[in-house]
Image 1 (cartoon, rainbow, N blue to C red):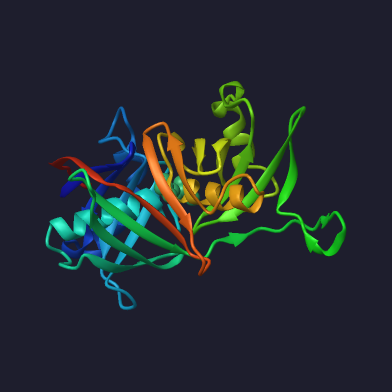
Image 2 (cartoon, helix red, strand yellow):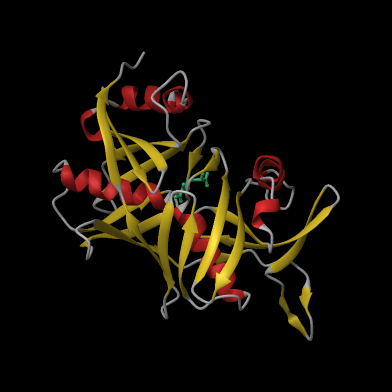
Length: 281
Ligand SMILES: N[C@@H](CCC[C@H](N)C(=O)O)C(=O)O
C-alpha cells in the first residue's frame, strides 16, 4: 500500500488514499494503526489519516491516534489532508469541505508571503463545557474556569471543544510543568468521561501564548491545531488575550482567530516528509 508522511509543525501523520482501497483493507489498516504509528516498529507518527469518499461534503477524513483510538477531528491533520488531496489530484479545489466525525470543516489553500503554502481551517463554533459552579455575583451563569485536583496540586482548567475535547490550564511557570506526569492524569480525570487533550499555557502578551500539549491517544506531541485553537478561545474567555493570537508550540507557530461569527479559524503550514510503501497483513 502507498502512503505519504506529512507534518503540521511537527505533529506528524501517515496519510493513505482510501479511495483506491477496499473496505476490508481500510478496516485492517485501522486495526493496525498503532503498529504503523509506532516509532520503533512501524513508520512512526502521531496519527494515521485515511482519505475516504463523502456523501455530505467534498471528501471525508478519518483520523486514528497513535494508540489506535479514533478521534473526531484533527486540526494539524486537516491541513496536511487538504494539501495531500490537492497535490495528489484527488480534489482539484483550493477551498474544500471535509466531513469528519465532528461535522463538516472548511479548509482553504492560501499562498503565504514567503512562498509557503498556508492552509486555513474553519473549525466552526467552539463548545464550552460549563461547570455547575455559580459565577460570583451571577447565579444564572456557570464557570468555565474550574478547579481540577491532581494529587496535591489544584489547577484551574477551561474545558473547550474545538471538534475534540481540550482542557486548557494557564500557568506562570511552564518550565516547572512535568507534562509526562501531569498530562495523562488530566487526560483521564473523571471530569472528562471521554478523556481529553491537555494544554498547559503561558500567556506572554495580548496576542501571544506558549503552549505545551499532551494529546489524548498520542501523548506529548510537538503541536496540536485544535489545542492551539481551544487555547485561544480559553484565553480570550478568561480575558487573557484578544480574539486573535499566535500560539507558539514546540514545532512552530500557529495563528488563530475567534471571529465575530463565533467561528474559530486556524492557519499554518503543512509539509510532506516522504512517500513509501508498506504491507498490510
Ligand atoms: N493533533 C490533533 C488532534 C488529534 C486528535 C486528538 N489526539 C484526540 O484524540 O482528540 C490536532 O492537531 O488537532
